Amino acid sequence: MSENLHMHDGADYRLAEAKISWRDNVIRADSYDDVYFSVEGGLGESRHVFLGGNNLPVRLQNISHFTIAETGFGTGLNLLAVMAEMHKFPALQLDYISFEACPLEVDDLERAHAPFGEVAAYAKALRDALPPRWHGTHMVPLLDGRVRLHLIYGQAEDMLAKMDFRADAWFLDGFSPAKNAAMWNKNTLAHVGRLTRQGGTISSFTVASGVRDTLQDAGFIVEKCPGFGRKRHMLTGQKPLVTPKVTTSTRIKQVAIIGGGIAGASIAAGLNRRGIAATIFDSAERLAHGASGNRMAVQSPRLAVDHNVASQLSTLCLSFAARLSDTLDCSVAKQVISLDWPHREAVRQDKFRRQFWPTSLMRFVDATEASALSGIALPLGGAVHDYGRIINPVKYVERLAKGAALALATKVTDVSRLDDQTFHMNDDRDITYQAVVLAGGADMTDILKLMHKSGIPVEITSGQVSHIPSNSGLKPLTAGLSFGGYLTPVDEGFHELGATFDRTAAMAVTDEGHGHNVGLLPKGMAGLIDASNVSGGFTGRVSQRASTPDRNPIMGHLADHIYCLGALGARGMTFAPLLGDMLAAEIADMPVSLARDIRHALDPFRFRMR
Image (tube, rainbow, N blue to C red; front, side, top):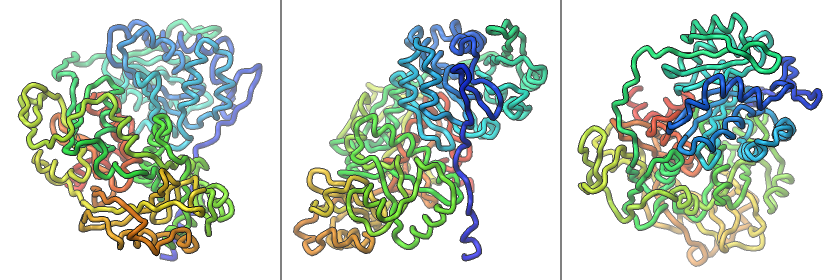
């Protein structure tokens, strides 16, 4: 054990900083000695090279969905040019997948956007919605969800290898091949070819012979075209149609979701963003009746010193969930402090201190700083998660489910197929669904049996939270605290303190459960709570939760037009919003931009495969 104590010391999980300068008010990348866009007119260049080069003004007419991918996000100017065109295509749903190794700071983006007044409103909306600078895929809904920006932070040549989407058009927009060879090498452009649909196109400002040859090797027919400004030429290309496009499936129009908690609501929200109707079925009389129905809940990451797949998934889900909670006005507190308690957590966080993490994901404070941030006297310091949230989970679920039809107080006892793509619920022949999603939380085991699905081990446990009357010592608390348990700020006179972990899945609120929760508090904090009157002053709530043996959720395809999202454990409010959106994309046959290793870690049948 001791010889591995420092195994990951010095590990750096931060993104590289963009090294930039300004000349004549034009932003330059000093690392590549190149400009981000043409000094003769960046917006005009974007429209000529990328929109025009891919014939988008014609191709986007009279279609419902299109996918654009881009090898360098830079200032986002190409995206702004696309957003400015979207009013011409009111029926269009657009996925925009962009890779960026060194994201710019918001202040630099604002300065770069300043000359382009005609897209100022779109530029501000983009800057306001940008995710934190953490490695991996970040989902950013824009234009009321009609545009979905998949912003993938990391080296494009590495991240492309992990992706499995299909693009209709590519904006090849790295810096000059002579100065950024990795962006244009054989492996990178081979993945561009792999990730392009038959008939898909590419365009680029460069006509370097090496790039032309490599794109041809990747399967494109390329040609020179008139360039922009002083550049005589630019490059366009198309991946030939090898086989005629045949559409045999019926477009998904209506989806049945079994489960009215955070998983079901998140899927419904993702479908709604993509123009697909959803009906949520639940046996309870209201949404968020189960584990999603606590008075308050925590959104926070679960990080690992090797930042493994589960750790990466945790950060990506937090990025989306916290930003969405703020947007929906469901955040009660906008910070969570993970205290150095108990001992095993202190040891783990001491390892984190010897590493390098994005400060917006995790930064460390002593007891004095932690007390100042939280508003109450704390006996020890810990890790601050600035994207951690304490949220109102019931409001969160209800607002995510807005737009879905509700079939509450309706227990699903039968799901029957009329044909390969048509389902009826409870033998109701009046309404048909083209897909069914199992999102039943603690009922997942029963629902899987109902659908005759096996090989997916799900464990059901229960947890009791205690509702603690506020007092003068606790009332000033403004941040969420995590310490093996958790403590929230006050809401309507009570704090949430939790939680027990009962493998018997018992459902009774007990004084022993309250005592357990109080016992989780760090030394020096127990005195903040009067535990002498547990029976008279404490109330609580017990709910059941589902998890898997490896503690990762399950998400994905179970059978033809049958899907699932569940086993979220105690982190449903963190996991479900992004995973629900990605599952909705899979159902709609739209891009899922999670890396392949993360998708494998979520596969419902991964245990059978092992």
